[in-house]
Length: 462
Image 1 (spheres, one colour):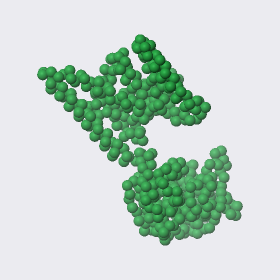
Image 2 (cartoon, rainbow, N blue to C red):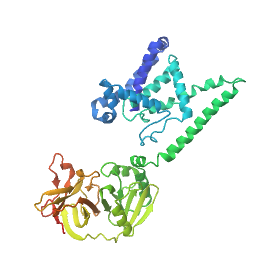
Image 3 (cartoon, rainbow, N blue to C red):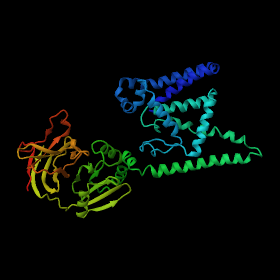
Image 4 (cartoon, rainbow, N blue to C red):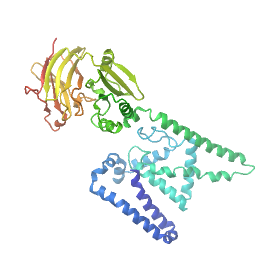
């Protein structure tokens, strides 16, 4: 978005010269005309593309609420942003962790005070071209953040970076004016002030960039730090042929991220969200299951304890945890079944426990064929008449339960826990698999068993 302000600056700068320095502009009108001709030739292809592809600008529509308010006659959001930007140099900067250390001011107090003083000097002498140029550049560079959400945005104001120090150094020539015998102490104090400001700014920035920012959990999620480390680990361990990765977004970012972050194309990777009560075990290679998760993203506590009880070796790496799980682990459901859904998922059985006011169902599945589309398991609690009392499906949960993905590999074992309220009139459970993307507007399309059924019934014993 910052680039969109550049044409605005050159247009306003040309107007500034025409109004306040007409003679100088007229003397160089050929140079100015040539500049605008070249600028237009460079910009026209992009302009034509954007005009013919309005959907390419969807991001602007997500953050332009202050601009829309301004066009509707409400200047308050823009004025509020202006205040946030102005105070961001000393008090509170960019609010978003993914772009910077959240709320960290752009300058420390030593340099911020010099910046404000230098900015006042620029405003005072704005008719002088060199001051007008810097002042106009800084003002226009702030515009993208001024008319969008989350001000002050360091990314949208990045055009200001080349000239951001000029208001600070504008005061340096003034220091020399104090160089008299009587005011030598004032001169020394001024330079000490500047020196302390520069040194503390450098040290503070170094700590923020190399320690505070990369260790923040939101930053690690957005920039896929753990997946980058996992990709490096996979690249250097060629004996790994299959593995499972637990992450936050297996339906969107994880697969393409790993395709970029690892150079290997011969490893079969499956992904799942551990917050959904799910555990995935890949096909066995060399007698061991391999599972990776980001350090800051924990497995379901039940499955974490279960893996440890099975004798898994847990290794903490830089930003991820590696589980080496022995192949002889006890994947033995209490109630065994053998039912294939949609020719893709085989229900191997289940465990069922009443825990106080909850029903805990653990279902065990195996991928027989790589899924052709996302699928989700559903579990319904039914009364004696077959009416549904409660259900566990992805749209009814804060963290969607049981959403499965087409990147899973044949042979993967899927262990899924379902937490349901226990009701006195509950008689049986109904379990099956459906395509969640067929539910809007619906009805949801279930995967059928080999016998043609859309679900299985599980009785609830007293």
